[in-house]
Image: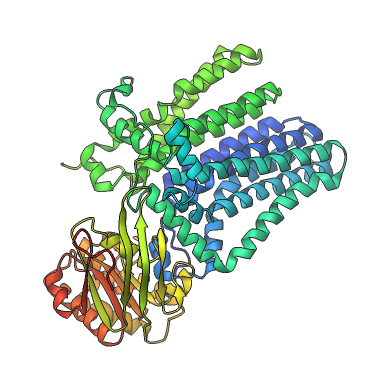
Length: 420
Length: 218
């Protein structure tokens, strides 16, 4: 017997995932350093608030996709961890996301090679406020999503949200999602609005020279979310199992529903190479049932337009675009879960190289939408032009291929196609 | 000594589809083995998911003694051993390490634990490869490790979904023997299986599910 028992059920992340995360962090940190180069303290503070806003968008969307359904539930049942440990475990899984926002924020605040000690108190204050807002947004979102199970199940099974069901049936209104995911969509909006309000009040306080008003919103948001989690720490097992049970039922692991949306027709994929078209079609149908990616892409581009209209520095726009493109292409990772892509089945369908090609096209589905949105920006803003649009289109194509390769090599590995 | 596990007017539906289970009331008593029977899609796995807190009922409650199991999963799961269908154990640990981890995590580690683990794995005929990583196991060996993981902490309640699947004849006999001992010691077992020949003779009750089942059985 070993001297020490393992402390975590999580298998270590595969190296392609670690490399991908490291690269993403590197790109964001590089963007942050470029953004901060030569900036004065006030510009850094403004940049940090905009970065906190991008982070709020990330935290409003990512937690249900990162945390739920928990892949280790059955092992966790065997171990039967107490509620407080389950809470720590799930909070820990949010850590890498927080790192993606907090580390670039640190660089935006302090990366100043020419005069690292200049305006240090002002830089520290701006960073502290942004960090509080980021942690507040992350914790608030976690507290909301991690306890959403009962409400989502009630919606899914028709016990709640009848007004919504009536609107869908009578007027054809509504979103193309399983009904039980609608509360999560509301939660996304609610979490983003709460964080946005805190960031705006903090910004107004900083501009008015009120330290209390600048610090208080982040503290209040973090304290409020922390208090909610504290109150639930002894009953967190119920929230954990209920929420993960619901997501397992809707996302896979239990009987799944196709949802009300008209599924993607095969012929709509005329732009995909015929060799990969069947697998792209099957992949996109699965992905559409997991994630309303089109709406999220539209929301992200609305954010980019707002940034450009406000005259945000090109480096910040570049950082946000990188985040949007990486997040969108990373979504193909949802197609590599055991439920979506059973390994033996995958290997009998086609080779690893073919799966990379398939998932590249899955990611390229949004290339035209991205290019169209950026073309609109270029038309109305002299800062950007056709070359900028072309460059970002190439970046998207490269990221599509890169994300597909990482996801596929992580899941299907290097193996050759097995005989059917 | 186990308490009773009681379903009270439990209904479960997925989305707005038809109910998989409707108005089901049933008491599973300590010292009994109940075999869930029914065709594919009858609700056997759904019922086991409800009993193991992997699913929450649309209406109704499941109680273990006085405990609402869905309101207090951690307190309930202290008493429960689980064998779900499919692979569920971490692939980068050996079977021995998995069992050790479960015992330590549940605060049930004792000086004689290594011997008990050895005895359990020997009875389940998991040979010297018990120290190999679970990810290298065949489906039958994985199933043996999962049965051992369910039993190692001496649960009061045993919930098993197709426990005999993939097992060779001798291990299936050993598993049936373990189940028999468990029930004779006062344990409460609920098992879903299509291999009813091996289990029905020792079962205290069968619970038919699906089209032929009564709307509410007790």
